[in-house]
Image (cartoon, rainbow, N blue to C red; front, side):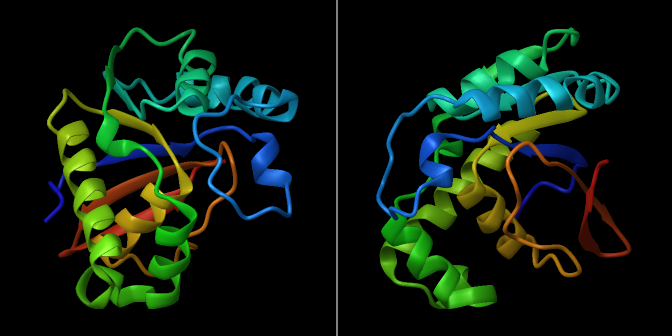
Length: 176
C-alpha cells in the first residue's frame, strides 16, 4: 500500500539510450544535450511547486536532472536507491503483464514492484510536498500499484506528474 500523500513525479531527462533502437540495459548513463535542455526548460515549473523534499534515484541521469531542476528550490535532497530503474527484461515482462503485474507477474517483476513500493513509500515519509525524480519503470510500477486510470503509465522524459489521493482512489495529472 502506497502512503496516501500527494506528491510530484518527474522522469529524468533524455539519454542517448532513450533515442536508440537498441533495447538493452543501459546502466548508469548521463543525460544527453536534449535531456539537459529538457531539464532546464522544466525548471521554472518545478520551482513553482514549492516542494520541501526532493527524492531521487541513485542513477546518474536522475541525479543530473534533479540538480538542474532544483536550482531555485530550497528543499532537502534524499538519494533513494530503491527508486532506481528496472532492467529491460523486467520492463518487458512487467508491461506484458499489464495492470496485474504486481499480482501475477514473474518473481523478478514482483521483486521490482516491491522495490518501487518501498522506494516511493520512503520518499513519501519525507516532509511534503515531495518531488520524486526517477525513471519510467518506477512511474509504470507505481501507477500499476495505485491502479491509476485515465493516465498513460508510459511517460516522456521530464514530464512532471501530480499524484493525489481522493474519493478513495489515486489520481495522476500531467503538469503543463
